[in-house]
Image 1: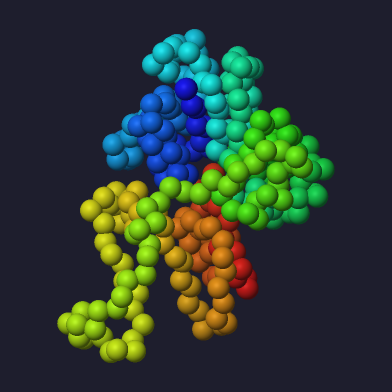
Image 2: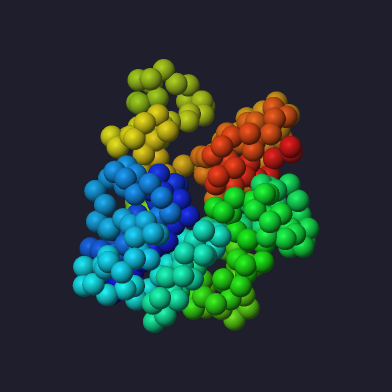
Length: 283
């Protein structure tokens, strides 16, 4: 089977942690997988040992075959309903209408649009395309078109249950979690000898970073200990609280700026990817 994953950013975007793992695993199972990106195909070099083919949107819309058997995709898995993903996917399906369409929900698209534009979704829906182009990045969803995109999909996948509220009624849907090895996340029995060796008190609470042999740079890499971690925030004004929600490390920078009373949209990457601040904070 030919499977086409469509991503909103290049191969350095966080979503490639998920897409790359799925595409490589499906390749090992005998499928042919292509991951489409809007630009910078050379960034595939940051993905360790990819088993899939990388291609740009432009290349996939040419007559040149990309899949090994020279056929088009049997399944198109659009990774988020972001506007650049939606536009490319619909054009690809116009040329290859036999393919099945799946759309993956990874973030609360409404929250991203509202945070980026600093306007409620009800206001954004009333704005013209010209006004929206000035307020929203093409790497964010369109306030109206993203819901229509979900309606025309054959099925929807989602990463967390809360996102089911965005799925049209009656649409086949399935929760799709990032692929991890559960054995890596089982609690271990504390070793008193190790505490004594490092000089830690028996009642001391320790936060340990295990390290990685697959670093890309100081920001981490694609190994499990880099891509599946908790986020711990500390501030004298915070009350103890747990907030259960998938987050990404790229949300740290806009969170710090907002805490300092600065505009997160001053960062180019925040504007381009529509990165929100971390949720559940009192600012």
